[in-house]
Picture 1 (cartoon, rainbow, N blue to C red):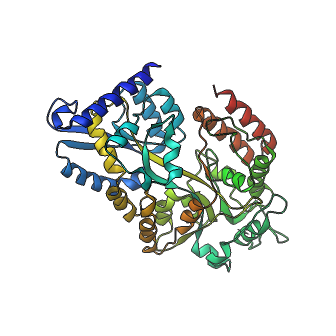
Picture 2 (cartoon, one colour; picture 1 turned 90 degrees about the horizontal axis):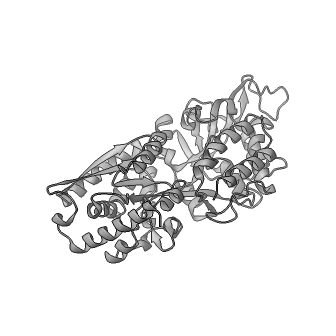
Picture 3 (cartoon, rainbow, N blue to C red; picture 1 turned 135 degrees about the vertical axis):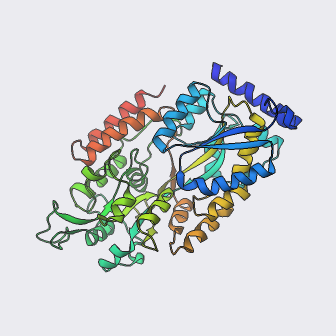
Length: 445
């Protein structure tokens, strides 16, 4: 047993004991109000969460909560530094890509004994969300939210092309000619002379508006979805080895490259490659692209870029193997080294309760982890004139979970570099697939 795993076991046992005893004096604090640190990265979600936490504080007058907000990149670098220095927040958002590493290092509190002791009903969460955070009978978080990938579109761009939202339903793609998906994107792509990619005289170097924008540091918002739709599996098993070099995956990567370099219907990688490219809501908002593949967490950003019903969301196209989307979710987690385990558990129960998640869903901040509240979130956006049920349909259909691997940080760094080269045409999809498979697997112990 490692030192950190031993720490986790001791803290979990202490937390269970304290929860059983009850009473503020048993919290491990020195008396008076306890201040918990709660870490998150999404500014959009902060207002409704902050309001709900004020209610939590009223119900728990001996507990104060201090929110620590950092953007995505700063959040993870800071959190890992804090975990190494044993100064991490008491409660924090956890992401699947970091979960295997954290669970192995023993920095997450096992909630299973507490769930059983307090008889917390975990059946209210989507099983696909809840099961992904369990290891050897231990539970390292309760579902906070979920997300899928959809096709955001500009209502003006569709109208200008003589299309309706219904025309985006039932689109298909294939590796041979691109299918109806590419044909529709050709209608939405226009150069400075008004020519489309399937017309003589079209100039791919002087495109006024592309049909599609894509951007994904790991693949979650672009080629992973096409891979799923083409029958590719990224790993041989959860927590297993990468299998990106199989033909179905290579075909999907090739298709994404073709959208940019062969069909000329997608915004060039020189514009959108991460980490320096603008976010896709900005690209569509400026009229540089008619549609964008992006996650449901970007709804607020698109609403800002294209206000007053200026955008909508359609399903992703179906590939040779059918429809499909990456399905991901976050959990609320308790730091194993917290000095206030009882209070942290109380806060986590609040954050994963129906009362809290309903309040956040009503604000349209994020799809809730509690399945029965999905319509609350959809209705919040319907009231703004935006139909977001495409994300829900995707979640209920064929999905692929975010890959679970202990070496996600290695994959993330290498994938960013390798696929940026592919989208620029500097590396073939076949060579990229072999390279990322070999190098990412080398980091798995």
